[in-house]
Amino acid sequence: MCNPGGVAVQLLIIVVSIIFTVLLTLIGINMSTYTQILYQIVFGSKDYTKFLSLENQGLLFGYIVGILKKRDCHSYQVGGYGNHVHILTHLSTTVTLADLVRDIKKASHEMMMREKSLFKLFPGWQVGYGAFTYNISMKSVLIKYIQNQEEHHREISFKEELIVLLNENMITYKEEYLIV
Image 1 (cartoon, rainbow, N blue to C red):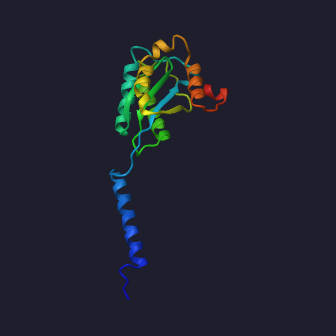
Image 2 (cartoon, one colour):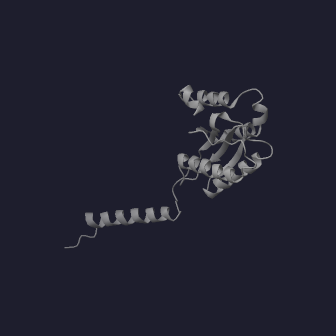
Image 3 (cartoon, helix red, strand yellow):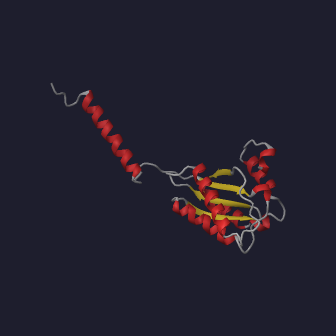
C-alpha cells in the first residue's frame, strides 16, 4: 500500500534535497553562505632576514594579489617591509585560512626562487603565520597601516610588531616560537 505522505517519501525528499545542495556547492553555486570576515595575515622570512627592497617588493606583492584572485579572495591590501608581509583580505567561502596561507607561501617561495636575481637574500618563509580578524569598519585604517609599513618600521621591528598584534588580539604565544 502506497502512503504519499509517509516517512519513505519524506526521507526521499530530504535525500534528494541534500544531493541537490551538495551538487550546487561542488559546481561553485553556494546560494546560502554569506560572510564578512576581514583578515590581516602576517608572516615573515626565516630568522627575520631582510629580503624585501624597492626593486622586488612590487613583484612579490602583485604575485600575492594574483594568488588571492585565483582563490576568489578579495585583496584589499598587500604590503610589508624588509622581512615580512601583511595581507588584508576577505576569504572566499570555499577557502580555508590555513590552505590559503599555505598556498601563498608555497607559490611565492617558488616564484622568488625563479626570480633569484631579485630575491638573492630570501631564505624561505618562517613556519606559521599570524592571522587577525577585524570588523569591516576597520578596513580603511588597516589599509593605511599596511601602506605605511616602511615608516612604521623605523620605530619598531617586525618581531615587536607581531608581539603587539598578538597581545592586542589576546593570543597567547611562546617567545621561542616567534623565531622559527
